[in-house]
Image 1: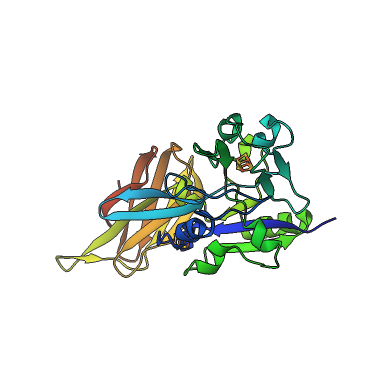
Image 2 (image 1 turned 90 degrees about the vertical axis):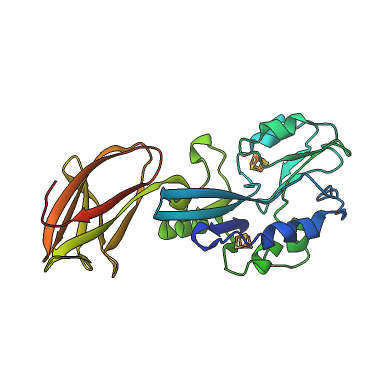
Length: 284
Ligand code: SF4
Ligand code: SF4
């Protein structure tokens, strides 16, 4: 069994500096790599793009970012609509849209369910991020995106598929839209930061007539009477419980500490929730 390329992207580490985006532009804009990719036009193409998501409401808000690109799927829809073998899967897992054979085949663009293919109007050519195959073939072991990323978002891994499955299981990696059955070779760590919701709040108690933050309070989240999450308040009395499925509805939050206890119920919709100030000693 041959070792194949995979890419791991850690969403938690991305701060939207866009150095990876520029690196892909620098590599391909105006540069032809025969057999791999024709030159990328100066404008309009984002072979590697950065998605953004805001979660929460004031005062508990966060912005998250995630690089997206061709997933080099093992069961690639773009290959299925290509004529004359214009899209091929290499033995090392990389998908190449042939810069000559694919000319005029605009149907390849629409076939990608991830929107990862751009149409080059001037060259009448579908184009995508080629996993830096031209560099890997020359002996590189990391993509340019990985080399330039200052926060270590990317990890290029060449292993046999069973070993990659083990790594994915051990590290809790996800794929984008696995329900499509395309079997991507790009994996995401901490993808919940883009796809799931959190609930947060601030816990206070009355101490000698003064409202004080309660640090170290135990916060337990339940659904249908079953515990589904747990946190401890920080120095400022704040807590956050993450990885909640959007629109998962009916929850009950219980807070306990030496300063008292409280409880609050809420419905989770499509967005994260800030429950505001929760006062101990006044159960809801
Ligand atoms: S992500 Fe899109 S372009 Fe890339 S291999 Fe999969 S279907 Fe093809
Ligand atoms: S270089 Fe790294 S931190 Fe910067 S946008 Fe790209 S992935 Fe995010």
